Structure formats: structure tokens, C-alpha cells
Amino acid sequence: MAKILKNNTFRLITALILGVIFGGIMKFLPDWMYVDDIIVNGFFRLLGNGFLELVKMTVMPLVFVSLVCGVSSFGDTKKLGSVGIKTLTVFFVTTLMAIVLAISLALIFKPGIGLNMNLVSQNTQYIPKQAKSVIDIMLDIIPSNPIKAMSKGNLLQVLVFALFFGISLGSVGKEAEPLIKIFSIINDCIMKIVSMIMAITPIGVFALISNTVYSIGFESLLGILKMSIVVVLALVIQSFVVYGLIYKLFTGFSFKKFLKNYTKIAGIAFSTSSSNAALPFSMEMMEKMGVNKAIYRFVLPIGATINMAGTAVMQGVSAVFIAQAYGLDLSLSSMITITVTAILASVGAAGVPGVGMIMMTMVLESAGLPVEGIALILGIDRLLDMLRTVVNVMGDCICAVVVAKSENDISIKA
Image (cartoon, rainbow, N blue to C red; front, top):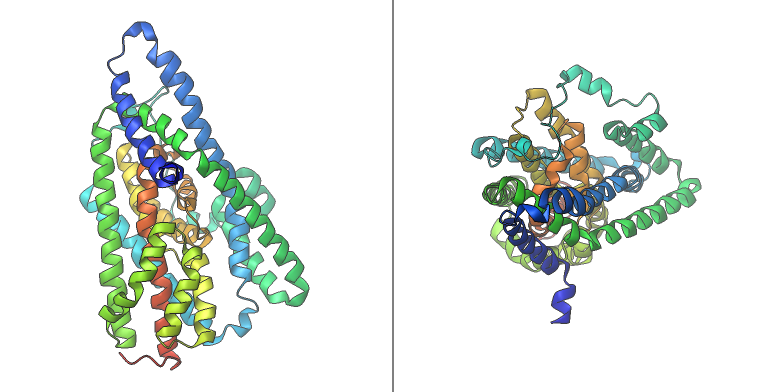
């Protein structure tokens, strides 16, 4: 029993249920209890908004350091050769397909319509930023001053600088190894901070969900359920249609046999919500499938760092869901911004539980959407995180087999 109580998933689900119950109870409390002034706008606002500020605090250092670590691990880009180019191509194409699929399904099923989040508030109606043209978007991601970009919180510019810095760092050679190690240590420290914040997530979830249910009623739960269904549908299509077709077309092997081999890895990825935790088991699977050791040792660790198609699905659906919940119309340029940012954010997302929610902040800010909308998805995020991690790890394994086949470095008989 004690082990169950310590389980973070159990605690989050409990916090979500209690938040729903307490939010409903608050609607029936008498006026003399000052629910609005003391509980909603006082105690719960402190807990809920304080938690969101802690999450936002980690975004900038996490994005920069994590991405530098991931990109620098490639080493000298001149030596990447055909394996490196093919790996990056597969990762990019599948992630792009995932985010386009996610946005399309969210626009079709409209899970956020009817929530009227603009009515929720202690403040005035949320007014979105004016959408930029595509050219302005492209120019705006070039950091003329990286330090200024960090201080101003321009995450897209920080990502671009991190990409260049990581590539350069990996190209320097042995002289850069001490600095790469320092970045790795800093990354570990940041992840410790994230772990601390994740430990208090149930408290933040309880306060935020209670306020949401109290402010707009149980209608919000229907919207969250619809959003979750859209995410799951997108993940299923990504797994069995997109990855299935890619695997069959580029390898000619049986996808059913791949799924049979992947079952054990899927269980590990689902239970840990961590691409990194599943990495050694993915390598064992690739070994049994006859993938050349040099290839899977290159593809899988890089994939655990930068290939997050499942995370991109969640970010795409969530961004559209939050825009709909706040009554905002997404322009073409806004959707392009969401697509580009979600791809870059998935590259910068570490392969550990809970980070996808932090990267979601980046997507919302870049598209000019209200970060407060994260409150709607916090309670269900942990469960969806488990599902999308399964898709993330599957993408890594699919890529390893596809690249190995293209290089004739696989002995599989399927």
C-alpha cells in the first residue's frame, strides 16, 4: 500500500479526482465563506499559479542545455555520413507527420470548443497576440543577440543558437570533451530541479483543477476527455499506420513480427514514461533482430534525445485544444509556428517523465497562446505521457531497422 501511495501516477490521478470533487463542492459553499476571495483567488491561486511559474522557470535552461547535449553527441558532422543523414531524415519526417496529423485531428474534432475559458478568470478576457507573417516568423528565429534572446525568453531564437552551438561543440573534437561533460552535468542538475517540481505536481494539479471546475463547471472535464481521445487516436494512427507503412515500405519485413518483439519494450516505456529507461532494452531488441551494433548504438541514443514524435502529437493537439478553449482562431502562420516549435521542442525534450509538459509551455508562448491553458491538461498529462513514450521509443526502433536495412547491415530473416 505504501508503494502505491508513493507512485506519482497514483498521486496525480488522486489529485485530479479530489480537485474535481472539491471544485464541485466549492460551487455550493455559502457566500460567508468567501470562496472567491480567500480560496479561489487566494490560497488556490498561490498554489496553482506558483506551480506554473516553477515550471516556466526551468524552460529556458532545460531547452538550451538539453539541446546542446543532444546535438553535440553527434560529434563531427562531417563524419556522420549516410547513417547520420538517413537517421535525421527519418526522425524529421516522422515527427513532421506526427505534428501535422495531431493538428489536423484537433481541427476536425474540435475538443476545446465550448469551454469558454475566457470567462474563467479573476482578470479580463485574454487577448491574443497578432499573428506574424511567415517571413517574419522565419526572420524572428534568427538570434542577433543570443544573450538577449535568453533574457527576453525568446525560445525559438535560443533553440537556433543551441543547435549551432551544439554542432560546433561536437565538431571541435577531444578539446571540447571537458565542456561537453560540464553541459552534461548541468543537464543532470536541471533534471533534478524538474524532478523536485514534478514531486509537487499533485498539489498544483489539485489547485488548478479545483479552480477550473469551480469557475466553468464540469463542462471542462468533457473537453479534457475529448482532447485525450484525440491524442490517443493520433498516437494509434502514428504507431500503426505511419510507422507501419514506413517499416513495410523501406524494409519489406513483417510489421507484425516487429510489434511482437516490441511488446516487452512497450511495457517498459509505458511504465517508466522514459525513453532513456527503455534504451538498454531497445538495444537488446535490435541485437536480437540482427541490426548492426554500430548502427543501433548510434541511432537509439540519439533517438532517445531528439526523436519525440509522440510528444509532438501531444503538443499539437494541446495547442489547438487550448486555442479553442480560449475562443482563439488559429491562422495559417500560427499553425506553422506551432508545427515548427513543436518539432524543435520535441528535439529539445529530454527522455524522462514530465518534461513534455514543460516543452508545451514553449509551444504555447511561441504561438501567442495563453500558458495558463496548461491547467486544463495537467491532470491527464501523466497518463498520456505513458502512451506517447511508447510511440517515441517505437519510432527510435523503427528508424534503427530502416537505416540498417538501407545500409545492408541487418541479418533479420522476416
